[in-house]
Image (tube, rainbow over all chains, first blue to last red; front, side, top):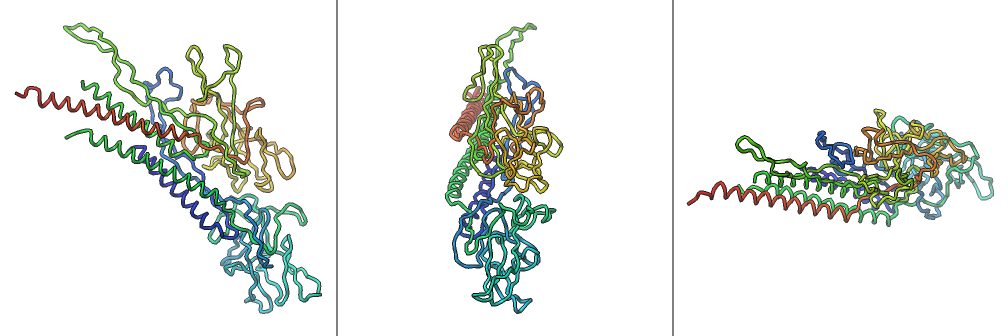
Length: 274
Length: 293
């Protein structure tokens, strides 16, 4: 098979992969807390065809050898951590994070991190006179000590900017501090690995101490919580559609190169009239 | 007569190479930091043919016996800068000048980045590259500045090569509180955004005086077989090179030109194939028809 057939075929497969990412993003353009995925291209390892000394003719400006490329690939898929738009819901247990932070949610005993803050309270099964904060699929939300957040029943709950949980029994009673939400701030996105449901776990070999910024109490500049708001998906539909058009045209051109190299094989095939 | 058959066959092989190159360029029309490749053809060196008769040889003249794909040259032209707002994305923008030893003036390069003097000597414009290192410790050069930071704080290229600093050591930004605090100025110096202090780390921007001496490796990187001939050094003050944080350099492939190349290579291949067929039918006549009564 000739080189340009391989190159064009590899390219078409890669562009298909890029299109899959775009489709994934567009499908999640209304998923709260969704972070769009991106993939950039890189040329596939080049083979240098060796040339003998006889090829070193006068006027040559490059070293001996002739480059042959094999198309393009996506070396890694990255997540865009750009802030999504905020949507006001008015629900006191809907929390949005302003800045580079993540909530901690326990899924099947494993601590995962997410920016989806559409939480609600349910009766705590372990403790009848308490209620637990859970996410949209019923997984417990963790407090700053790493335990599921659970507060006294029959009281109104409010969260402040830094994640402190305040309880109020009645209208005229003073609010009491009942805990603090875990809010982590990743040093670098590569320390997290995306899993399903818009959640992330620590990448292999990374500890929580390495992955997250340790801030002093009261230090300014960290992420802030906004109660009664939800962070929307950060998918930019204009960008996705533009990318899709670009991918489609690139695919068309690669397909053209493929059919052209096929026609060349046809010509080679029809050379002999035997 | 048979000689011409081989000439046409050589033409077909060469056009196939040109077609491969055009396909490679089409494949990489959206690749970060990709540089368009051009295939250059060269006629086979001329051979002198001579006639031998009665033990004496007499020179008849020169003969060319075809063409071959001689070299694949990269077009090191600046690609478009695309804004990504990511703190670990970098692009280089460079316009390096060379002093002409004959005149003492700066050389004015043409659109393709080369200059040919009256004696026909070609000078290529020097180019700037990010310096990266593979696992064997070899230095490689790339224009793809789409970097990431790994869990130990090393700055890595998208293919996983370690990015080198101006001191020749891998860049480690693990001391920063978070990647968001990474700020790099035009000269490539890493500044801590939270405190505003210079960290003393500087991205290693290599200047390659003879960029055509670089060999393309794929994965967006080049290497130099002979760094001395290529003339590689780190950028110094006064070089017209800027590091742009939050931008990546797009591919410099000219799609229109590449599509034309693709079609031209195809048609030239077809023409050579026709010549082979003509030779074949002539041979057919010679073998089967001559002598038929």
